[in-house]
Image (cartoon, rainbow, N blue to C red; front, top):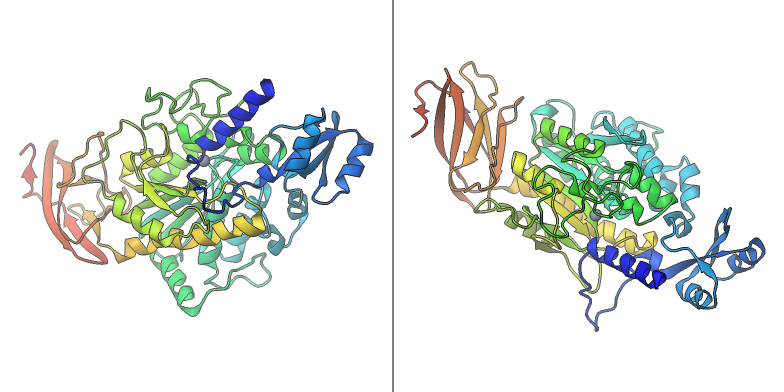
Length: 511
Ligand SMILES: [Zn+2]
């Protein structure tokens, strides 16, 4: 009975991080998760040696309680029925033992040949910063409960980079979703492959056509592209070395927090099953809103950058989620993310026979998510991007999913550039960038959104759903009085820059 319950809990967990099984009877179902192909037996050393020598099996570990051997799933089931001990929820290194080879290697080709743990991710990020000093800058944005660093790589040519629009790509909020990390690493690798590295630097560029190379170069020259491939390195360490299920959460004693339930917007919304107040739950939201160091690191970064667009990767529902994803939260009307999301899914390739990317509002009840907090606080077009596989064998489903995500990820950059995008810059009386409240007058904001121009650059971007006129309202304080400026801006395509100066003949509020 207990085993049956464990299987049910495991199955429930898989469903929660993904979507319902939509595969039809006619479609061939791909191996979306490598783990399902194997079982892990716990036997004495002698039998361990014998079993590990058989086809499709390998020695996984020598433990105080026995020798762990990874065998094909059917074999494991057969032996379990005959009374063999098995390991439920084995650490992922039992499934992918080559991780130890990749960890020890100093060859970037080897690092890129399979899934990465937190140490390899760090080597790659630091390696790229060293290899491309003109276009990649390393930032240490926070320290986890267990002393690991949350690392960000800012991509873009250096001159004037702080003035440009910021984009965010992040992965690994859930440490047991290594494919989500791969999607971000692939964005970094692809963009930087358009640049020559420092000779002898540890890199493994992808090959780009001449046109692609020019396109990537353009992105690096026009944007600042922030990549945080692994938000939750503590969880990833647990995933590889202790438990795939527990690896979802961060390193807080004893059981960890689900970081994507810890952001302040609609934290503990009261919606049933959206998150849990129980430490030890897979969906534990943490003791208070934004309590976790990883959440704080991401929030501080967002506050400095005011991202225009963010893609936060997860696995594996094959969907792009549009804010607000939380039940009960009322999205701005009209909500501008839908055109963008639909264009993203059109660009992505799931590389699965049974399912393509689609845009949706949510999968199941959630609250305290990063995407909703980003949208509510800064107006960021913030998407959760659920990849097309869980953790498939890397060389087959893994690479297929990563390659299919690449055009989706890059589309986020081209969509901004193709517009219609209104790029507002607000200057004060003396011509300096001004921090003011700003909004579209044709959009109803129903969750107390207070959008502001960037404090350092005075900019704010509106990515529109369709060409036409947009009325923009700027609100600011002058001599203790609230004042406003209204400006109608026409934008049909591309980026339409507009400068608004705060002048003294401005309307008084209230009007
Ligand atoms: Zn996830």
